[in-house]
Length: 163
Image 1 (cartoon, rainbow, N blue to C red):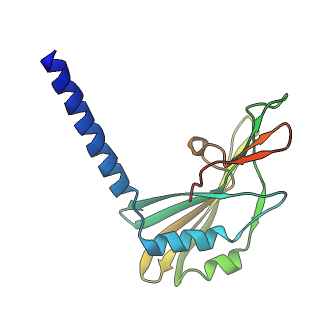
Image 2: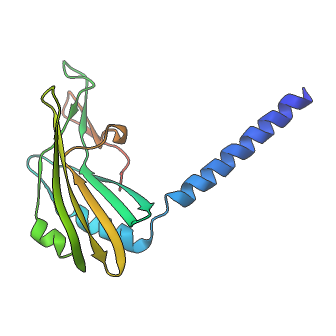
Image 3: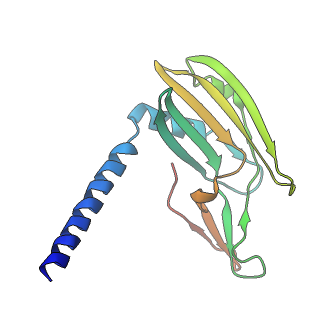
C-alpha cells in the first residue's frame, strides 16, 4: 500500500510541474496580446457575427500569431453536431499599418480532392522592434473547437474565448 501512495504523489508532482511549464510556455508578452486584439478587430463577418480565435507561439524566427474566425456548432435537429463556418472580409491596407516594417506578404491556397479547401495569408515583419509572423486562416483548425453553439430554438451559447 505504501508504494501506491508514493506513486500517486509522484504522479501529482509531475502533473503540477507539467501545468507550470505549460502556463509558462503559453505566456505571451503584453505587446503581442495588444497586437492580436488589434488585428482581430479587422475581421468583418460576412453574415451574422463571429469571434476571432488565436494561437501564438515563440519560434526561432520570433513570435508567430495564427488567427481565424471561429465556427458555430449546431446543437439539435437534423444538423446536430455540424460546424458552420463564417465567411469574413479583412482590410489588409489597414492591417498592414499595424506593422512597423513589412518583409513578406503571401497568400497560400490548398485544395483537397474532396472539394474542401483552405487558404491563409502570411505577413512577416516588425511590430515596433519585434519580429512577427502573422498567419490569417480562412477556417479554424480542427482542434480549436467551436466559438459558439446554436440551439434549434435559436439561442446561442458563447464558448470561452480563444484570444
